[in-house]
Each structure stands twice: as structure tokens, then as C-alpha cells.
Amino acid sequence: MKKKLLLLSLASLILSGCGNINTETSNNNESSDITNSVIEATEAVSDDKTEEVTTMAQENYKTYFPVDNRCTQKGYAVFFIYPVTKFTDEYRNIIDDELTKVWHKYFPMCANNEMTEDMYIYSADYEYIYDEQKDSVIPDILDALDNIEGISNVIITDGNYPDAEVSEEDQSYDFDEVLGITDLDLCYTAHAEGFEGECFHYNIYFNNGVADKNRKKTVSDAINGYDYGLIGDDYAGYMSVSADSEKVSVYLDLGNVQPQNSDKAIHGILLALNQVSDIDRVIINEGMS
Image: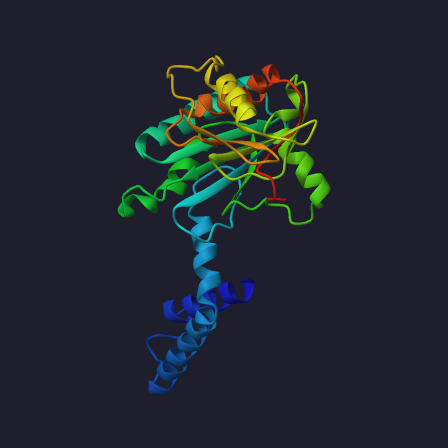
């Protein structure tokens, strides 16, 4: 990149008549040399167009913090937001308020957010908004974050965890912490194996290893009768319950759920299952690790 910028600067100097070139006395040969130099510089910059476009796109983000955009598709993006020090609950409310404005602007975009003291994760599924709006979603989210002090940097991906160096064991633990599972008082073991935006699959296993229609009904009654404590809206997301011979499964889709209620729905299902006896463990998004 430095080499390319050097060549561009050289070309600019040649065109402006700087250095030892005298524009009044330059003959045709000198003009030809200038033209060739400019062409060579342009070709050097054009060798890797993809790299140049990516770099320029990142530099166009007018944020006080650095942005590493690794997203390769339009329609879905996950923002990993890192603090200068630590995130607090008060800090989360500030971020939620700013990002909720973006969510309202691009409705029916689906959004979900999770936070630990070391990271705030915001997923945006905007596949079904108008095509002409899609290019502005990521810049608008970054503009909203730019209004908030204390952000160290932001990494944007297609959904993959940004640190490829993290081991599977450590990454699994991170998902438990990011989703806030470690902070819940549960009567069974709960674990998350991955993160899939606004969709969550809860696989519920029982102590005797058997699931049937009666246990399916018990689980369904528990989650449907639970008070999720929602803020400003009574919609906790689309939920469905199914069962096979080994487990009962709950599917949660947070599409169209207010961002401030996403945690209440995710945690609420786990807390509601405290009312169901003989649960051994619950695995969220099993098989995604």
C-alpha cells in the first residue's frame, strides 16, 4: 500500500510540474516521459483493485475508533464492539438506545444484542429490507456508535467469531458469558455452543435420557406461562416446542423483538425451565461449535 501511495504522489508531482520539470520549456519527449510515468503509476495502483476498494471503504467510516470490516455479504452483519475499559449496565443502555434508532429506521430489520464487560455484540439481519437501503445499514450503525464515548474498536463479520486464534473450548465459554448464561440461577446445567444472530435452539435433556409428549407439554406450559418482564412491548419472539425420544427442543426467533427485550426472552426461557423437573442440561445452538 505504501508503494502504491508513493507512486501516486510521484505521479501528482509530475503532473503539477514540481521538481526539476520546467513546464514552459518541456519538449515533446519530456511530455511523453511524463505520460508514461503517469500510466506506470496508475497501472501499479490497479494491480489489486479488490484490496484498494476494501481499504478505501474502511477509511470512509468517519468514526473516532478503528473499524475492521470483514463482512463479505449484504443482508447480515455482526458487530463486535470493544470498550476502552469495561462495559457497564449503564453503558449498555446508552448503546441500546442509539442502535434502537437504527433498528426503527430500517424496520423490518431483525436485530439482537448481547454484552459482557469486555464486548458488546450486535447482529443485524437486513436481508428483507429494500435493496437500495442495504448499502447504508453498516455506515448508519457505525454513525450511531460514533455518538458513544469509550469504544476502543469495532470488528464486523458475517457471523464468525472475530478471533480465529481462540480455541474451541475458550470460544464456547465466551458464548456462555456473552449470552449471560453464567449469571443465571438455574437448577440444571446450561451451555451455548454458538451464536446465530436472532435464532436460538434450546435442546433440553432429562436425567433419565427420555423425552415424550408429556414432557413436551410441560415445557410448553412453562415457557408460555412465564412472565418475561418485557419493556414497552409484549412480544418475546416466535417460539415453538418439539420433541423426539431423546430431548425436547425449543426454538426462539427474535425477529421483530425490541432490542431491549432480546435478553429477557433468551434468559426467560432458561429461567422458565427451572419449573420443569428432572432436567439434566440445556444446550443452546447445539452443534455450532
